[in-house]
Length: 137
Image (cartoon, rainbow, N blue to C red; front, side, top):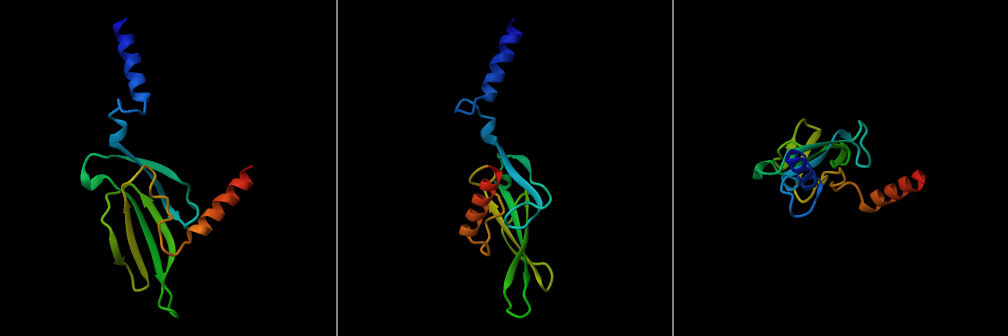
């Protein structure tokens, strides 16, 4: 009888998202995608999780890849990788025409959605979401 009571109480405490549950706050859930084109994941969006305890391990990582246009000299967005790896923000020139920008976010779960890049307008993203909602109906 006491085992069933203990089991039921522990299940209720783990299911509740309120202040009584400590374990939910120590887990960070991030998006995982190996090729995000700025609007949708081309390889299938998945999720990954990590413990949100250590300060250097609290981030969701977005790696934006840019290629350099020969004629204008501008770095243009190519694709992004979303992951749960520990993050070191910055930019890195991988090849003479390919640059990687690493962006870290810590504010909430699923904060690395692939839209945090300067080449994509927020109005265009909003239009794509509205179009998707209309097509789903």
